[in-house]
Image 1: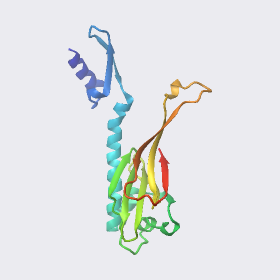
Image 2: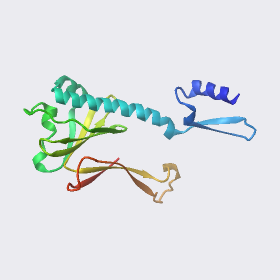
Image 3: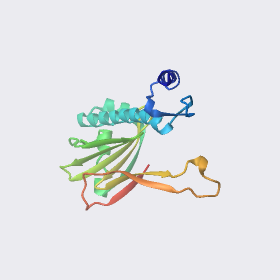
Image 4: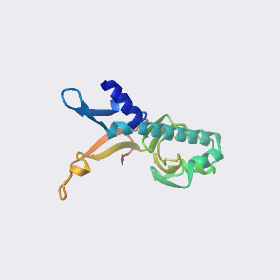
Length: 201
């Protein structure tokens, strides 16, 4: 009977969520009175779908750069792309000429790795002809448009998630909440000779 009740509630209230994404509370007799959707788990499926879509956009962009397909580039890039750069000044224009179509050289921007963190997608690669390690961090809107790129050249990047140990509702006015700083990704292609940088999300 509990299984049937859960199936009914799943189809009516929880849509496509599976039973491992909710928890129920009740008395010891087995009469469960409340089902609570666990926000972190319920949102994880949405985040995975979003990340997959965002990775697809970034992959399309790199294919367009390599094939010099300006139509695809215009469709996935915002008209006013925000660009940040960190690295040696001599490599300051490593990515931008390919995005604007002003480069006369053959693009060598083939990512070895693409990883996602929600609306932020990270691509990492190595340009053998110029001896350049690069990391591109793309920010993508819910509409699948890239609005920002952070370009790191010959720089080791560590992505760190910042958070609080307490939920905002548990933090008292005037008290300081303990915060956490968790490293969740680090560039893999560069060596120890390059400077390091932490990107907090």
